[in-house]
Length: 416
Image (cartoon, rainbow, N blue to C red):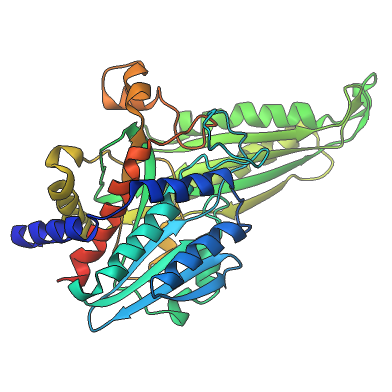
């Protein structure tokens, strides 16, 4: 985009969103926050989004991939722009103490997807109300089950690319820790691939007083956990970004019974296909080797569940949207935070060859940010409640700007 085009999009965005009601946005957001729903169970959330899209004039389809919502607004000739927001919450017990905290025991919107739905609904309404100012087709996607990792793939399997207008461009954004008021953009690789690995170690169970008559899967699995820590440290070059974490370890039911099996849950984050293959091969080798060394009677079960692919922003597109956001909010508010080891299934919604852009909206309240230890951005980010924390509590000041980031991205194509 030329500089005049960037300025024009920013100006039009301000005009279109000038009448946004912060109170209405807050009310909708707080209602969603009070009623979190897990992956593929977002029935109430989806219904709320669908209701607002219909009222704004969209042709709405519900039940896409079970609980997904797709709204289509055809407004003359022009490109097809997709805006995506994910809807699911997490099995986290909220500890924020907010007056609008979760009312569902053990569940919480700890990743900001309630913000995402609020932004998406309001952006869709603002663009629909100003349809005389742009031309093209707008497709609004309420995606289920991002946290479970299967939502985008399920929507593709349910025909989202054939049942609805094919996108020319796809946009998405995510709430993130960081002093509210910034809009990080990263051209190219921005998020990592994620794979889950399920391991079952088979031993021989028995009485805790006679360990010599057993093959203890707890000890064997413990050796597996310890040895896995060397995979990244000793087998992967320091220049590569890799995380291998053991997130679950389950074995036994009583302190005086040696169980017959132990189960491990692993998560692997990588940014390169060859490195991914090397890490997964090393995991298999370590597990099989430790089980063989322990004399397990049956080989271990190792199941790899492919999760999210890497997220690679189209560099030119990201540069254009970053320029628009800089014009909207000030050049100092947009910066490149770099590659992250977090993962997203967002990119699966883009058919092959379709460019996409995915950016962040920082959301930490100023007092929390100022109280965090450290000096630089990265030091302070580590000291504030981030995504998936039971203390994650976005600043309500981000409600209006988060609508404008989506509106401006859509207008960058619909007015060109």
